[in-house]
Structures are given as C-alpha cells and as structure tokens.
Image 1 (cartoon, protein in one colour):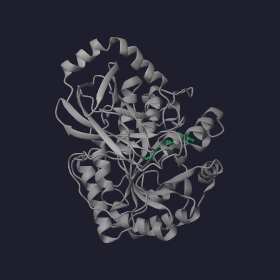
Image 2 (image 1 turned 180 degrees about the horizontal axis):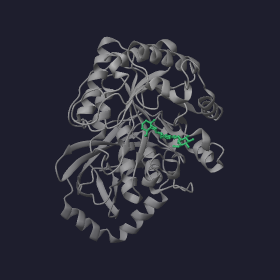
Image 3 (image 1 turned 60 degrees about the vertical axis):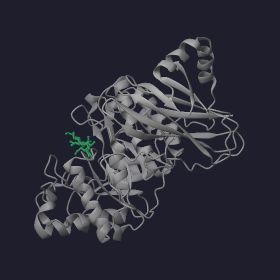
Image 4 (image 1 turned 90 degrees about the horizontal axis):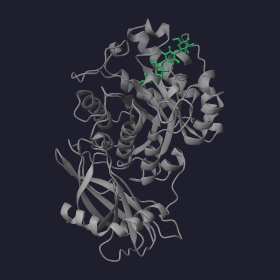
Length: 471
Ligand code: G3I
C-alpha cells in the first residue's frame, strides 16, 4: 500500500517527472477509439443512448440536427400517449406518433413506446369511465396501439406510474387502479398478445433509492410477476432529479437488484436540474451506475436542449438552449467512453440476490478484442464504503496481447485518493492519478489484473472515471 506520506514524497521527488507525466496524459492515444457522440460512446459497451422527441420541434434544424447526431433511441414525449392516440373512444389517431416513429426509423434509430396505460394524460372520455367499462376500454387501447406499432417498437412502457409516492408502498389511487388490482398484469398480457417482439416495461419515478417504500413495492410486483409468469421484460427508471429528489448514492444497487430478478433495466427519462460541474458529476454518477449493471441496456434523456425540457427553468439537460454542449454532456460522454460491463440484454438465467448494498465485484468486460493495435479496457468496481471514504478497484483487461498498460483515474472534487495498492502511481494533477503496473505489465489477450485505492469522498460519492492505454 502507498501511504499519503509516500505519496507526498513521490510528488516532491517527482517534480521533474510531473511534466513528463502530464505530457504522457496529453499525448496518450486511447487504445480503443472513443465515441465522439453519445450514441457512439454508449454503443462501445452495447448500450443505446436516447432522447424524448416532441414532434412539433422536428422542423427546428438545430433540434433535429442534434437529435439525429447524438441519439439512437427515440421516445415520443407526448405523441403516443392515450390522449393523442385515442382522442375519442375507439377512434384512433396515430398521425403524431407515426411522424416521430418515421423520423426515427428513417434515420436508423429505434423507438421506445410511451405509454400504453397511465392514470394521466387520458382523453376526456376515459377520465370519465370506471369499472368494467374502463377495464375493457383500457385493454382495447393497449391492444389497438400495440397492434398498430407491432414490430416497430423496441420496448413499450406498458404501465406508467402506478405506485404512490411516500412511505405507504401502495398502488396509486386512480380510475385504473379502482378497476381491480390486477389491471397492471392484464395490461401486460394484452400488450404481449398484440406485439410479442416488443420488450414490455413497467416505468416509474421515485424508484431510484433502494430502501424507499415505492422502490420496494415496484420490486415486489416485478418479483411476483416473474414468479407467476406474467409477461414483463424490463423496468424503466424515469430519473427526474433535482435538489428535492437527488441522485441516490447507491443507484447501482437498485438497478442491479431489479436486474437480478431477470429483467432489463433502463434509465428512461433522465434529467437533472442544475448547472456546471455539480450537474455534470451527477449525470456522470447515473451513467456509471447504468454501466456497472450488465442488464442496464440504455439511457434516455428527457429532451434535447434545456429549452425543450418540461422543466426548462431547471436547465436539466445536456445541451443549452442554443444547442451548445454543456459540462454535463462532456461528463456523460467521458463516462460512456470509460466503459463498464458489456450490456447483455437477452434473458439469462437469474439468481435473485437483493441486498442493501452494492456488490463490490469486479465487472470485467467482454468487449470483442480489436485485432492489431495493443488494446485494454479499464473497469471500475466499488469496494468497501465508510462514512468518510470508500475503496475502489480498477480491473485492466488486455483485449490483445500487450507489453504494458497505463491507467488514468480521475476523482471528482472534493474527493482525493489517500492510499493505493497493486500499482505504481504518479500524480500529474490533484484529481488525476496515473497508475502503472508493478513489474512490466505484460498481459496476454483476455488476461486481467487489478489495482485498488482509497478515496476520501468529502460527501461526493460519484465514481472515479477510469481509462487505460496499452503498448
Ligand atoms: O400542445 C399543447 C398546446 O397546444 C397548448 O397550447 C398548451 C397549453 O397548456 O399545452 C400543450 O400541451 C402540453 C404538452 O406537454 C406539450 O407541450 C400539455 O399542456 C402538457 O401537460 C404536456 O406536458 C407533458 C407532461 O408529461 C404531461 O404529463 C410534458 O410535455 C412531458 O414531458 C411529460 O412527460 C412525463 C412522462 O410522460 C412521464 N413521466 C414524467 C414526465 C414529466 O412530467
């Protein structure tokens, strides 16, 4: 272990080498080509990166230009909801929804369908219904809309926001809920029958913190559905964050525990109010949480520019109102390029193992080795946590035969690294550690090696960014 004192001494002794180390960082060429857009960077680990689109904005060239360049999964912000698609009972209008679907597919993008059954944005006629008539009308709506879009939707939010906020863990009271507690599974069965190839998701907000009653209630419903064979494939976490509803420190725990039930998980409506580096760090934390869970298959932000947001005054998105990239954009892009588990969205056998804490197991990637240039992948995994500090492990995987590697670990203010093990660190700046192997660092393709460190977090639990280069 390298102690803080040794580290300080190394800093003093290494004053001359500091310049060299800085140069090394500046000149380092990533061994794997980094994605220069959000969709390309996410694709590096097999994930998508999406946005919500408002059809009325598509003729704004700045808007559609950014959307086309950066995103490869599209959600209609309002146009596939019940008030849009069935304005009068049994009279369907798909023109606005089709406009978005056609724009997406003609630009090579996939579409998340949003949303089939929801207590809100019901057309007036549905709001006034109850009992068995409403149940039949809801199931007819699910069937007709899913049939119209059959084969064209990656995943449907079949049921949206069906649980109450607060500590009750109860279902949300609504006209749909009053038709009987089984309305959710009835909706999922109708959706499966109409479009067997779409993934079927339950989608909600305030389900991010693992210990919250609402999170537990949704978890128990999904567990019950899986045990009884009710068709459910995924859980969407809307992820609308602000100071009243912050990003939880152990978001990965929630995502992982749901995934362990045998469903995909997706961040479906991400926005975080704020600005500057604070906002950027929070976005980074959400991306890292998703990347750490193999069945977290993608992230969608809820709009393109701040001015397009339903919370425009909170400037919660990745592009400012002029379409410029914000600090949050850069942190998301870098976090995506730093990689994580390779997404494995197809159903696999599962062994539910929910715990209250993150499982600090390394998450080696299975990225296909590119032939030719020496290449490695660095993956961060959580270790022990204490009130003032946490441990982290970086696993270096050789994608080709390599003769050595260098890893870059970037911590987020006010974090600082106080100890390291299994490597030789240098410190080109206060928040960057350059780690080289003890020994020559030669690895054969597929081999891994790990080093670790302790971070004093100062209240900032954001994961450090990790990358590596190989020679
Ligand atoms: O299009 C009309 C316009 O013609 C009219 O002049 C104007 C007057 O109010 O309203 C416009 O419609 C608004 C619509 O957004 C389009 O801008 C509606 O009033 C407004 O209620 C609607 O808000 C949407 C909201 O859902 C409704 O619940 C937001 O755009 C949309 O971002 C938001 O999305 C939801 C997700 O579906 C579910 N999760 C939460 C998320 C944020 O609330």
